[in-house]
Image 1 (cartoon, rainbow, N blue to C red):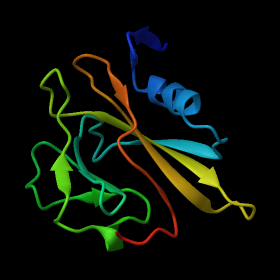
Image 2: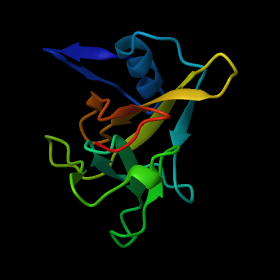
Image 3: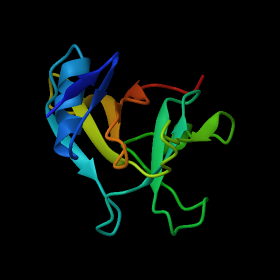
Image 4: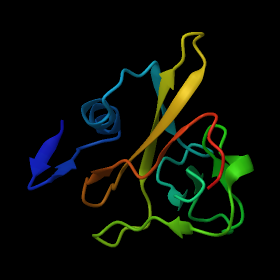
Length: 135
């Protein structure tokens, strides 16, 4: 259940990422997916705002072993890439992805959402149009 504290929203579990994305995104989603790697839902999140891209890795994986969300790998560059660290200090997050669909049922827009398991804060660090090109 979403909880408002000041200007920020918090959630109790991974399902709240979906509620948060529906609340914060003005368009309807076709479907959502929760991201986990090898059964591990607590992931390191890498953001490249310049490229409009997001990748994840497990805490035990080397920094260069990344799993890219949707179609963003070709746009990924080292420039502008940052590891997401919560304001509470946690370096792992639960990750969800909302898919806005085009008229043919394919992905038109990807919206990412995260929840810090330590404090519950919800965020949408990056979103992109499927046909986007790097800046």
